[in-house]
Length: 406
Image 1 (tube, rainbow, N blue to C red):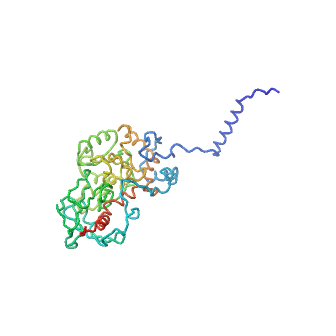
Image 2 (tube, rainbow, N blue to C red):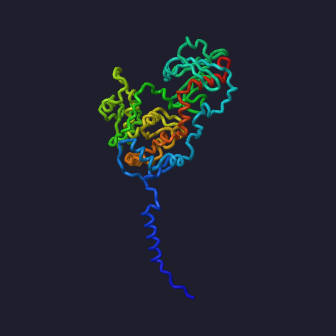
Image 3 (cartoon, rainbow, N blue to C red):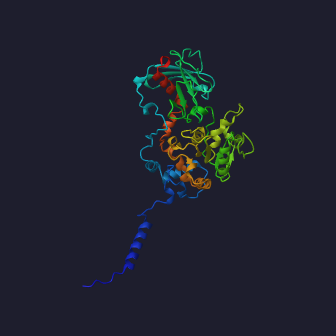
């Protein structure tokens, strides 16, 4: 028996009508475009992100929107599962519970380190520390408290050329990009994991006593904070090219556009730290930064692992860093916390991304999700290997060498 011709038009119409009814009733749902998570790693094409234009100034409101549209569970899933706290990197030395150091290798149970000459290390680091493995560590600038030290610590002065058995070990530190050794040290401290002891720039002790008021209100017209008073030609040219594309305030000596130095306090009086003391520019640095959605951070030298306070100040202030510097910067920072300028094909593309991000409260809030969702990643180890923990880690290295008996 011959089959009758099959008319497909009514069938397609019926399926389309049924689909439309299901969609209207809410039985079928498609996630809106603005709930998609912005790419989280530096190897994705950030310029391909779709944004929603919804200008905002209140950071807490943007957080609430992100919570309702994305949330921490999706964020953790996107960055690779878990809490993001089990990351590892050859760019960072393992510290404390993360390290595999054998306590039996310690040759001294107490180590005294005498700091010689001027260093960047603040005086309030002087203390008697209880370190891991039962080691105690005296870190001091006083030759009275440490008249027979196990090690001498140098930074801006040169260690003794010769050391005899029974003399203190010589520890030398250089945190500048060149990592220049003195040539006379027994232990070398730098920002790099390849050296004897690593000290990252992420420590809180670099900026004690500053005003940490963090504003929840962000400027919507002026997007970028920039401050530099060391006008290096290469950095200045890069900053000038990018900042001409973005509304910004420049507070330092370089490319200043706010009418002079120390203007931040008149713009943001809540950032005053102590009315009885003449303010210094660094007293209100974090507070002033916090009023901007973005902080431009350009390293003096762009070399491996040289990630300085310029980046960490921006993170501490609750702003999003636009970063130019170390090629392995992602080994040191929380997941999806910075905008890596080197990943864009041009400064124009970067500026376009920043402008679109600034007007999307959900996409912008996602750059703060690492903090709110407790997904620190490698940043946990970056802080653990900072100046804050340097005394115990130097004392540990001195103990393993045997101190004066080495």
